[in-house]
Amino acid sequence: MENLERVLSEHPFFAGLQPEYIKLLVGCASNVAFKPGEFILREGEPAESFYLIRHGKVMIETFVAGKGSIMIRTREAGEILGWSWLVPPYKWHFDARALEVTRAIALDGKCLRGKCDEDYRLGYEIMKRFNAIIAERLEATRLQLMDIYGDHV
Amino acid sequence: MATMSDSKTNEINLTEPMITRPFRVNRAIKDTHDTFSLELTPSGNSNKFDFAPGQFNMLYVFGVGEVPISISGDPAKQSKLVHTTRAVGNVTKAMNKLKAGDTLGVRGPFGTAWPVKEAEGEDVVLVAGGIGLAPLRPVIYHLLANRGQYGKIALLYGARTPEDILFQKTLEKWRSRFDFEMYITVDRATGNWKGNVGVVTQLIPRSPFDPLNCVAMICGPEIMMRFTVLELEKRGVTTNKIYVSMERNMKCGIGLCGHCQLGRTFICKDGAVYPYSQIADLFTKREL
Ligand SMILES: Cc1cc2nc3c(=O)[nH]c(=O)nc-3n(C[C@H](O)[C@H](O)[C@H](O)COP(=O)(O)OP(=O)(O)OC[C@H]3O[C@@H](n4cnc5c(N)ncnc54)[C@H](O)[C@@H]3O)c2cc1C
Ligand code: FES
Image (tube, rainbow over all chains, first blue to last red; front, side):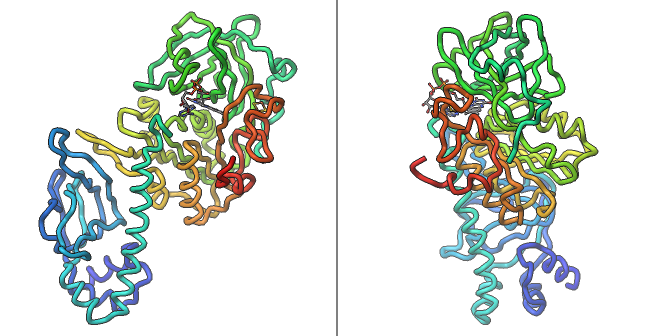
């Protein structure tokens, strides 16, 4: 437990979060590892947790009939994977596959939602962090959609 | 302001900057499906071509037209002048058809240089998007040839797909060095690609450089440079330490015709490399 507490507090996602909240979050956290090629999330399945990646690399992808898997974005150590646990109907919208041996802390979404409902200050801290990530990803997706290295730009 | 050093000015061409000199194509290399490199040597007495990383030449395809193209080769190898070009229109498509033994007109070198002197003692972060890697390649050759003069060196390179990645053999060589950090990402990929996917700006938060002691050089589409500057600023890099390379249509290349005017500056003469702080206001003006 002490070890998980340290790992959580050292992950950039929780930087600056009060120690008492970190202690609270340990109750929702577990240590997980994935082999290269192993799926971490599957599109359409219940989004029950999110992951703080500590080591390795993950590919977010989607399957398109006739084209195969289209790679959307990679995630690496220091980043987080998955926010569908925050938004009803709590289902994954994409697949995520480990490209390398990947170690992460899984945070149980239901458990976390419960703790955020009980303590709005914790909820606000978590939402602020997810907001920043969602805004950054939206901006990146816009750039990706613009196809800035294409012929027409 | 980045200026070209005196030792790097090409005397012959600055006295007669409007006269194109014939160069022989020694080798034509197909880099990707739409991008090619030409290795040139001057015909005539002098077989040396002195330039500073970041400078460009006006390349004339006889009977078709003239376009500005940055020099992409090693500044220490003066007998081999290299340009890397993406075939997009009339002149560049005609240039793509040239073979070894053909002749091409060259005027230059023109423009300002990347700040390799100012960057001594600092970390250097190079951010390239698409064909933007070509104008930055001479800087990398220079930094690696003078490795002891610099702190950490990081290249962050974004391409459209894995098939669009330029200079793959050279990149592999650089990747194997312990004193050079390289991160490549593509906007989209399918198949066996195991590298990064996502826009180049996303590499900035995780790349290892000291924002307080670093010089950043960015080359790519303007929109990519804009977002890259924002990310660098988020990390704490100040805009006077960020350099960008600008592009506009050109005709004379020497500040006479006004074709390349960007607000108060002429890119051919005052650029193409600028400290971002000097042109930040022009960067986001819609009418320019
Ligand atoms: C200082 C400077 C350095 C440059 N260095 C390089 C270099 O190292 N390598 C290189 O490949 N290019 C470089 N360019 C861009 C290059 O000059 C143009 O691509 C070229 O002038 C296009 O001429 P064209 O006759 O082939 O195409 P045009 O007939 O003029 O244009 C045909 C089509 O291509 C589009 N187009 C024009 N330029 C570009 C572009 N840059 N990117 C995408 N689409 C374009 C036009 O909008 C048009 O639709 C540089 C430009 C400047 C100002
Ligand atoms: S190209 Fe003529 S002034 Fe710049």
